[in-house]
Image 1 (cartoon, rainbow over the protein chains, first blue to last red):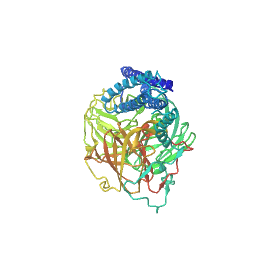
Image 2 (image 1 turned 90 degrees about the vertical axis):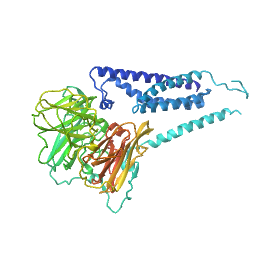
Image 3 (image 1 turned 45 degrees about the horizontal axis):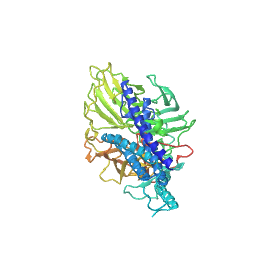
Image 4 (image 1 turned 90 degrees about the horizontal axis):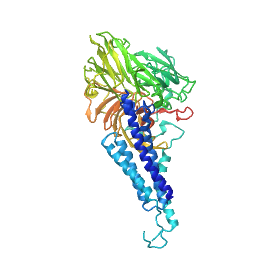
Length: 152
Length: 484
């Protein structure tokens, strides 16, 4: 279970990196498309099932990954933490879940108030760092004392 | 005190159940059956009106038709195909056609005529219907799959018959898997002129649609052109078939907004240097006179335009000022008193995380509930209805009520002072509140949904149902009806 906890934590960290990468990829694709004469307005943004440039796939991946895959991973990590003997493991998993839920809302609210996009970007680092730390800290097993007052 | 190993495992299992239990319960309760009636979903909202009077005999929605014996004045056959086609610009599009083209043929009729359209499904695997967007047709003719008819499967056909009772600009489109079929081009324009003929020397449709992310006018990328001589009066019928509001402005002439959503405005003033907002699914008719020099350019968003007259001209910068229809034109009677309604409804649009038919996500809500936990607005024939639409969802929503035209009473508490502003498609921006009113004068079961059609597929859909009208059709089921 501890190994599973570590793997899940590291996958979440990798997922955050993927989120950043696909977003920049999509924005870069958008710039190239606009440079080539494409004109962006809200009606174009809505044609997500048939986007005018390939890199728009990045926007879609970012949304699906961020709103479904990563929250699901965080939920599984929390459940695994109940069984894995990782000291502080439950708290870290819980904090990660809260940060990820916050991240989803910052992302959505950013469509109304762009300033929240700044916090969305910063919060990503918290999730990345938190997930990485949760994985690293779970390397050693929580000491399971045989007697009552073991030093830890 | 230390917990035994066994107690620890039990605690972990209990914690897991505590976390997963509610999630599983929400997931399970969101699952929709394979087939269900729209009248069985959600809850009845009577808007303060009386309970159902059971003394009247129930009538099925598919019985609400134009009498069979009447001879049609305008007959059209439309054949739907799922296939690749070529735009005028040469771009290949994988989508849908009617009679071999997209947009489909323009249907024109005169006021009072009986229109008969025979729809054949040649090769659309999901099935197809035709909805007469903005025409308040009889209940059985509305073309909403699973609500007013079964989707027409490949090889099948359906005949639509309705009177051209309203003069104005409309459009037709499939209302089966509509977020895909409308996007793919299964649509076309419908124009009903006065019996005395078109109201201007030049009468042109500008139907705007995005194919593969490219904006087109009447199927042409970029600019379409209409011939007109200096001094001609021109009516441009703008149809926004896309999923987002469209900003329109005019270069080269002063203009009036003569009609909105197929209803003429009263004493509209001439304006210039203003932007007109055309709601998704909405129509605006602009009128102007071609000047002695140069063409008139009707800019349809940033990338498309209709050029009227000879020569060319580049687009100007879009004017910052927006024409506010709340205060445009001059008032006149609307035919009923919205101050004494029989029913008052709230249509509150929000957004929250949850499950939609088992799929996790952040979905639209109606009055706080996720689909199908949404209101069924219930009215009786003849009721005066007020509806308050609020949007706190973070995005704009073009709300479309089938079968009726409603008049806008106020926006954000500011009363309408201009011409009666009748709508069937109303763009409700984030944070806005609109009050509208209408007369329940068209019995049936009517969709009331967001015309950003992917939003409807994401649960932003409710229904207006008349007392005594029953639903013989099913969502899902053997016909695989999926109106959104």
